[in-house]
Amino acid sequence: MGAGHRVHEVIVDSLRRGVTDASIRADVGDLYVTALALWAFSHGLIQIASTKAGQMAHQGISVQGFVDHAFAMALRTLQP
Image 1 (cartoon, rainbow, N blue to C red):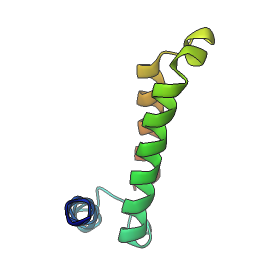
Image 2: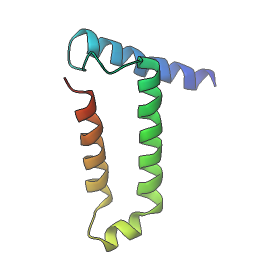
Image 3: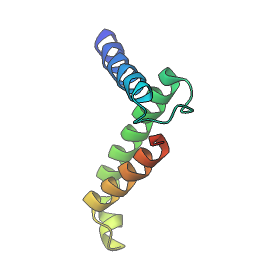
C-alpha cells in the first residue's frame, strides 16, 4: 500500500506542477481525485486492451491505435 501511495503522490505532484506552469488546465479539480481517475482510466484501458484485443482486431482496430486514441482523449481533458 505504501508503494502505491507514493506512486499516487508522484502523479498528484506532477499534476500540481502542470497546473502551476499552465500545461494543465487550472480547473481540473481536486488533484488527488484527478490522479485517482487517471489511474482508474489507465487500469481499465489496459484491461480492455488485453482482454478484447481479438474483438478489436475483428473490427479493424489495433490495440496500439486504441491505446493511442484513448490517451489522446485523456490528455485533451487535461490541456488548457
